[in-house]
Image (tube, helix red, strand yellow):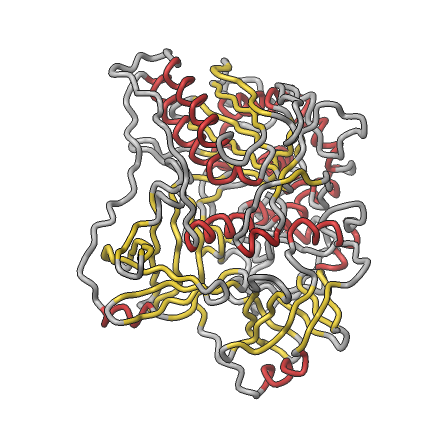
Length: 619
């Protein structure tokens, strides 16, 4: 997924804080007896799930396939390439696959590692000596290739300046810009999903091989896999079978009004290795079959089974998480989908400029599924479709029942106000803050800027179910209304101290976790860096004529912001919207503050402010 990271957070928070009722219909009944090799029910269920979960929502079109290593079990296309047209999606329709690209980039890096041309445990700067970045962390280890592959480099998610469009940064411009930025965390310590990190891996491939990333991928990865229609460059101007991405107007997302997706222009991204894959369902199915194939005795010729097993192994298992929490190998996600007795589902999702894609397979079941959609609205329903369908296909392939991993029952327990006081406080990610407040005998989670709150119904062990108080009197579990099968809020401790809050959403049989880090930032006291930064209070506007203009139109609800002190804390918020939102900053120097929770640096100058290359001038 290569875009500013608001999409997963927005999807789940809006569902959590403003539950929207969803329609339902009767699904096909499961057979009384399962016969190995009989996929009739699984095919019917998948077809029903797509029609009633994806197309019944706001997704104009999609393509889906299920395969084993040597057989395509199901492949079908649905809907249209662009809303408002009658152009059908076909097996040759090109979709953007977003961060599924990362799995291919990691495969290329490990291919070079097997050849002895890269040592993934060496510092990245050994291969790219002009890479520089500032750090507040003394005695921290250098960033290694393994850390970049597994999102433990300490880098931010995206360098926003010149991120996409015709005026996107060149590699040299990106490396020069990173020299003025700061790490968010010590390398190797925290899982922080980073598109920028994968962009750097593309530079690594080019430095080692002497050819462009796109050329290397086509020659060494796409051609051996038979992915003859896939691209990492912009599509030809006369491409006839190209899906259009669909996104909502960011203003409607913020104010909660009708957020119907509309077609958006194709903007190429800067960090090709993080999310530029353009592919069709035929090519992506071939890739799935390669992933399922026996690499010990097969003829893949790209990596050995030993290397591929290492790619699937969870790296740095004891590290903390910031924002998205997932078990991650080398370019591959683990354990997002789990079933009883089946804990080896591997895959990756992709989300880029109005497209959503998902790839998942189980080595033990020997079967997998791929989904391509042309709408950002495919995110949560896509997980429902893929997770539920994959289990049905696993049963059909093995001839055995595979019980779902049901959410832990949310059994209410007696409230404990004395213990709740310890959980109260602010929790933040990307500067966005949730406040946990104790009122009477109950805890509430509050989003102050949206003026919304949910009561937390206790289930024991620092775990709660968020409920809406209907008429202010009756608690209603909002999970089903929000389109989830379960929704919980839990608190995590380390060394006896409450360190984080995790929102865990279950669409279908997948688990999506968002981690909010507890903030202990002091109020603006007028001393030290707080005093210096108060001189920058006022209104700002994103620089006119900026090379980021195209990206701003897709993701930002406004170009005007105000830096002020709110509730004793430094706050950068939108101006002029029906519902104004913003981010909290933690001062650390006379010219720098950090986004609360994930620690991206905001830089201050006499003329304006800069966040990860995105600049705004004082008005």
